[in-house]
Length: 222
Image 1 (cartoon, rainbow, N blue to C red):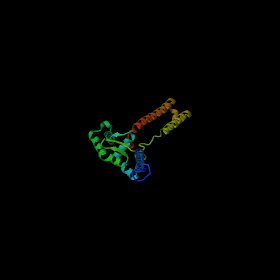
Image 2 (image 1 turned 90 degrees about the horizontal axis):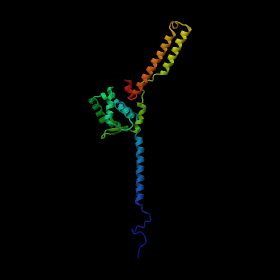
Image 3 (image 1 turned 180 degrees about the horizontal axis):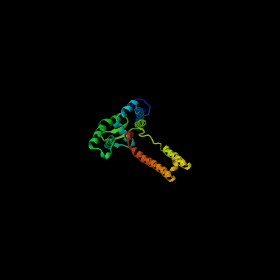
Image 4 (image 1 turned 135 degrees about the vertical axis):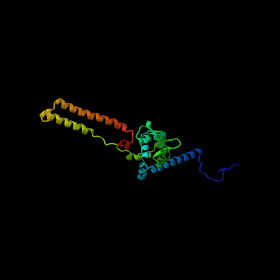
């Protein structure tokens, strides 16, 4: 005769979890852990003012950050070292010596990049020799976005020339000395030459300002 009931003798009527249900529960716990971990990481990424000032007080670190901000993705340490060395010596990358490159490379490799990585400002893989900015680096923008040179008010220059030219022509038209002693053609030539000179200066400045944008602001000031 067969026995009806739980063969284990426990008398429990609760259904056991299937393997699929167990896997789902484990996955849910892992997702929860990841979310909590990301929340904690975001909190840790808030940089204190003391940390920011400590990081930016070193010019070599500032140069490295300036270059990394221009990069779209990861940067090779060798590439970063070459550009920082060129900025430090105020020369082109092609002109740096092996000693200058090695000095900067060693300092970045052993000291500066590990410090920035510990602060959560960069993601530095020392073994592979690659580095990129982290999301927390955006907090440094307010300190790094410095205007290297004040903008020249070109509109004021053109307006001043217009007023001066009008004054010269008015004086010549009214016959006021010494304007009456100067031929109208000569006055017009002077005015056109003045406008041309300012226009050339404006063009030169604009072209060199674009090129200077490739370097850190403090380099542009020197």
